[in-house]
Amino acid sequence: MSLPLGKPASAMLNGMSRDALRQAMFGVAFAILIAPNSVLVLGFGMTGSPGNSPVTGAVLMLATMAVGLLCLRRDIALLPADYLFLAFVVCIASSSVINGWTTDAKEYQLLLLSLAAYPACRLISRADMLAGRSSFILVIGIIALLGTIAMTNALLRQWDSVDWRPLVFGFNAAGTYFLGTLSIFVIALVTTGELTTRRTFLISALIFLPMIVFTASLVRFTFIALAGALCMAAILSEAKQRKHVVAIALVILVAVAAGMFSRSDKAKQSLVFAMERPTVVELPSGNNGLAGKAGSSGSLKSSGSLEPSRSLESSDSVEPRMAPSCYLKVSPLNSILIRKVLIQDAVFLIPGSGWFGTGLDTFMESSCIKRTQAHNSILQAAVEFGWLGGALLFLVVAVAAGSLLPLARYDNASRFVLCSLAYVVLISLAHGRLSRDGVLFAFLGAAVGLRETFRAQPASAVSPALA
Image (cartoon, rainbow, N blue to C red; front, side, top):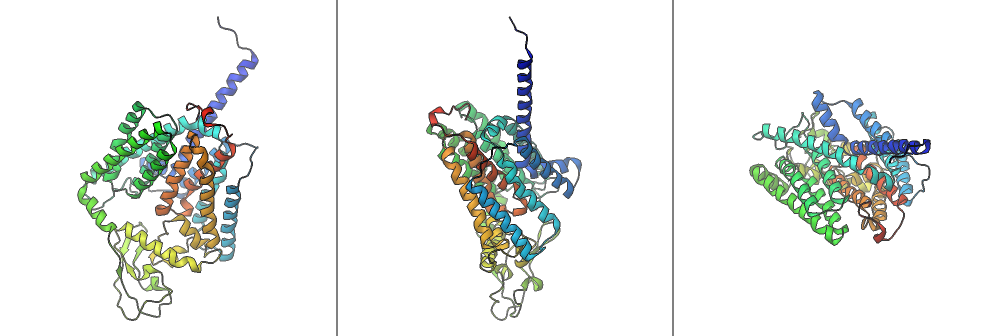
């Protein structure tokens, strides 16, 4: 016999319904915040737009605000990582005051949006992460699926193209964005639930073909970052779970081998490029470090491709004030070697950057590979925001990750955030740019939020269904 619901029971159900809706909305907003580039490429591609800065800014701002508002709480206790992040922001502001306006307004706006992801995700509690994981996994999975379909279509149409990496809706970095979203999806599947033989088989079957597609599309470093994250997940998991994580990693390895074999000619050329060394080009003396105006190892067109460097007549030795890229000639198609040279430039520039650096995006003016960032967030911070900025960013990452490490051994929510943070940090070492590092700051904030709201309890008390 059913009993009529009184007002208290009805109010309770309405409260539960609102709470469930809030949790679902949080999962959706967090997924968009973590995969903004994939969402934007798909959105622009479906509408036939080449890109739109106001739309990009609006998506980033709305996703950030939504996460912050949906997780808003009053009882916040600041942790050491919070003070380090605040010091990093003050360092950026001080550098901007000292060096003045060093790039266009759009880059400062993007940097502000990237930094805003930290306080927004800092409000995320462990309860939020657990409650919103279903909708997050669903949405991030849909985004990854749509990206894989778009990538497959582009790959098949451009299989014999001279371009190594297929263009998707006109975006040459779409493959990297989509694989990044798929990687977060894989990490979430591996870390947020109990793995069984059946679940492991389903996950493996789900990701096998997409991994082949992205390998054949010659997306490279993202796989290394994913391998690092899965390795951490295996180490942090219990013994009975570890074998399933290893099995999924082996499936990905087989898929990578199959993808490389399917496009072996391009894969071989990529490996040859990876082992290539730059050609030394001596410049005339008396350039006073302004070699970029006379000639360079490469420069970026507005389309984003590199122009081949001009040959320069050699005479005296190279000026010591010049960045290495000013006298190292690299192939415009060799992104691996270009990154190596950019790292050399950053290491060369750091000793002279001082405590507060030279200002946002000034690395691109100092390097002779024009309009190209350092592709390494910590090195960029050390050059543009000084020794203090680089050290503070490193400490924020180390302290946030270190504080969550003990919990990640027996808590699934913490393990997901920590493994995702490890993945994003690895990505930032090869593709990082501070004004586009919102995902990095989002996971840093989430890591600190989980650490603050986690209530210590013995591992035996944490149910797999809840953890």
